[in-house]
Length: 409
Image (cartoon, rainbow, N blue to C red):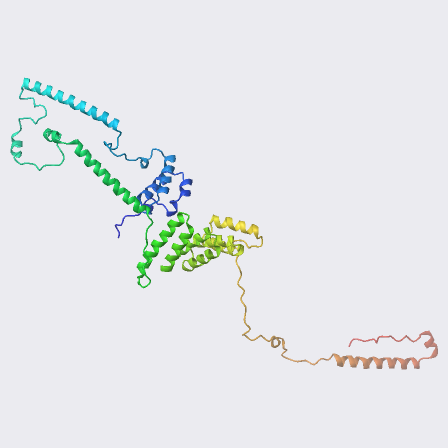
């Protein structure tokens, strides 16, 4: 398993979402478009003739001299060329062959006239050989399929038409094989559903559910959202995963079935609470479903996981413009704890209770003061009666006060 080759997506650092018409239309990187075209031609991710043709057109506009745009042309044969052109080529070849034969005969006649032993004969092996080579020549080498350039006898027996016919047959076989493979790739993959009584292991369920999810992804990329939801349903019935719930939620969003999309996002978050894609799709579904406050809280949760998420920040500003009473993104609720009355209340009367009780003397002083005032007035009246009448007139008696005079004790 350690020597297993990487997939082309991993090799070229691509995502599955990059195999899309819109992404290819917006991409201006010729290198990246070449890598995407290699992945599409390999057939690892499926057979998409229209997407492959679109990728070739996009690459042609970005880099016309790319090697990937070069196409192999088959060999020209009698059956593929026009009859007039084939007749012209055949006539020229026959003329060249007759000219070469005339030259060969003239050279042979010149060779016979000179008869120089040091000069090798035309179109033959030299007569003299070293001694070492003569001993080794006794061993007959095995015959090879390729004809040597100097073995003219075999070249004379070589039939070009037969060889060309063999090449044509090989080419026909190759075309038929390519046609059969293309037909197999163009057909939709058939997944045979097992009867309910067959019990599958956990690994078998996981593998089959993964294939059904990939099939749903292909339908989603083809914008067949209803078929994609059906494939996701089969996959979830067999083996529920967070990725499949997330993909089905996106398909529900495309179909504008927002309640079901929110439910799938909740299922995905129950399995993976920190899944940002599920949080984003849930917030989008809540916004489309006119649940602005709930969507705002979901965006706040996204910022807790990723504070620099530009999409969440922009949507939060948009929602706050709609509802100005929404709290800021960094706001939080204070927890108020209720204190129980289990403990007994403190009696503060014990703290102010005096250690010694003193009797109040104010009432006694007031009663004594009233008695002293009455006796003082009585004595003064007696003194006035004892005085003579002349002194009484000179010194009249003072008028009694309305308020009693209280002296200090």
